[in-house]
Length: 127
Image (cartoon, rainbow, N blue to C red):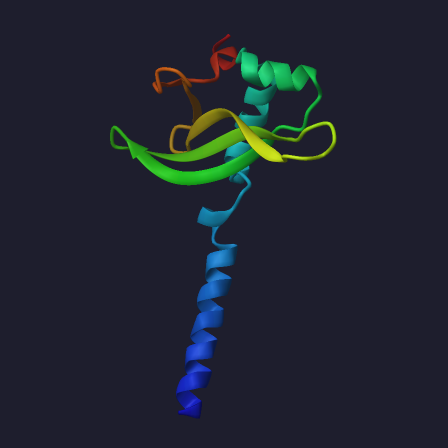
């Protein structure tokens, strides 16, 4: 009984550690997408992101999930800001954009918040 408890405890600890350090659960973008997302924040013409940039709010990048669209794998990220009322009450995260990173082709796409269509998000790189 004691041996079973020790093995079970060790297995739970190992699985918990693997879950915590797994890149899938990371709230930060992978190194190769970090630069593209920071570029997007700097150069995008998205009114939601531009408004927060002008207010000098810290825009957070949160990893959301891995997804496949049209047979292409993507890493999906949320851009947003933490806000609260002037008295400090009602803290919340406000989503500004959904970004899709294609690691194979090193391309960033954004989701239109109204139509939910995915479109290329780095036109400044084409010039």
